[in-house]
Structures are given as C-alpha cells and as structure tokens.
Image (cartoon, rainbow, N blue to C red):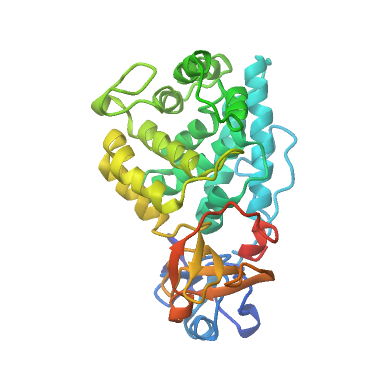
Length: 391
C-alpha cells in the first residue's frame, strides 16, 4: 500500500504518467506523485520546461479515476438551484460569490425558511475542495480576481485564505468548515455599507463608524435569527474584530478569550482588505501587506498565527505581479515546489507591451527569469485571469 495524497492507495490504482499527458505550457490534469507517494506537482500546475517534463515522465504517477472536470456537490442533492460547477476555479468562485449574495440577501430580508446553515456550509465545502486541489489558483483569485461585487467577493476570498491557513495549522475539516462559514457570513450586517465604502475616499462619518463597530454583534444576531446553530461559527462571527490586547470590538474581549478561529478570520479579513484596491487607490503591495501582518496585526492577533499565515502564502503569493531579471512583467501562478518555482506567467515585455498570450517561466531556470521586485497590479490584465493558470 502506498500513501497518495493522504489516502492509502493500492499500487493497482496508480497509473504511470505517459508522454501525451504532459505537455509544456499546459496544466496538469491531476496531482502527480513519485514512487513513494510524495506529491511532486499538483493538479493545474503548468509544466514550464523539458526538464520538468522528463522528470514527471521518469518518476510520475497519478491516481486512477482522479481526473474530473466537475467539482461534485459535497452534500449530494442541491438545497437551492445551483449553477453547474466546471473545472475552471475562477468560474466556480464567481458562481459561489453570486450564490452567497443571494443567501445573505435572504438573511438580511428576514426571509422565512432560508436554511442558511446548510446553504452556506455547502458553499464552504466547495471552497474546501478548491483549496485542496486548486490552492495556487485560489490564492491567485484572492489577489487578482475582481469581477464580482466587492462585499461578497471579499467574503469568499477571505474564506479561501482562512481555509488554506487552517489546513496548514492542521485543523480538522469540520472545524475548518465552521471557520469558512463564519468568513462567508461575518459581514452580513454591513454589505450595503461595504459596497459604499469601496468608492468612498473621505473618512468615515460617525454613523458609518458606529455601524462598523456594531456589525459583529448584529451579524451574530441575524444569523441566529435565521437558524444558524453552530456555536463555533457564531462565536467566530461575533469576535472577528476582537484583539488580544482588548482594543477590538464589539466587546473588548482580550487574551485567550478571543478564540483562534476569530483571530484567523480577523487576520485574513485585514490582509485581503489591504491588498484589494478601491476606486480611489491601488491595493497595497503584497510585500507591504505581509510586513504589516508580521509587525502590526501579529501583535494584535498572535505572532505565531501571523507567521503561519505568511508561510502559507509565501514571499511571492500566487497573483503577485512582479518584474523579472529580463525586464518582463509577470504574474506568480504557483508557489515554489519540488521541481522548481515559483512558476510565472509573463504578460508584458520590458517596455510594458502586452503579450498576446501568457508566456510561462520558471524563476529557478535562469537569472533572466529571477524575480527582481513586486509591482503594483493596477493595470488591467491583457486577458482573463484564468488564462494565467491555463484555463
């Protein structure tokens, strides 16, 4: 028996990678393991060069039946009319965002028989599937994908960050699911205000500040009234703006009384808000946001948690826009892996002229592809964000 991806797998369920299945410049269709069952490259990784291709052909195995173009419904039959979910994670995230908008809207209107606990948990389980099989693309979406309304996109991307970091912390799936559900619903009491603030350059007025201070308590009460009974979920929503030093809100809870799930949710919420642009300003550079997480937010929410968060994202998280040694502008698509990396998709030459399609680079190949600096990501991409990941 060989352990593949954490599951005991019979040798007869393994299939050797074949020549026609590994094409330079195309994403892998499944996770690829070595003879001992260790993950070499994850599904969706774009093979950059002949060296990587040859090693995969020499050492690579995938699991029989693993390939699927559809993410299954994690709970079987649908509770509501849900869209068909295909293999493109960026389309999936857009669908999730639209569904979340509908569910939160029903909670806000006090609609009877909403069943939000089951519906939001279903969205959370799909996020868990995405983070397991499309972690790098999910991180890329959190940094680059801005096609849906900010309040709901922010909640979905915050949930992705929570799931990825909680997996690194070793939290069990059910505990992570409660956290993800909390991230999806933590701003239910202030989505209208969020939509306004994303375009507001002037400082908050007193009414807005009061609404922000009150939204964790109001959200907690709205979710309870709508039928949410999961105590961990509710507790995380109530405390996601509390701090270890007692200077948070709404209750000024301090120290160990602030549960770890609420601290991680608060950290992910702040990070995503930092790196996301507004109509009147660009998002903060990733390196500056990570520095603030380490120096400031870590002091308020826990230094170890901040360190794990930074380690999971990496120095150059997927979605980071960078300048290479040869002057090209590129987007990080994969974090550093066994066979090299980070992987990059070059989108423009040294003069800033956009390419017709992404050109894939491995920054470990040569000095000309080495990352020299992180750049602002204010300019629109010359093509859809999914194409950077081969979709």
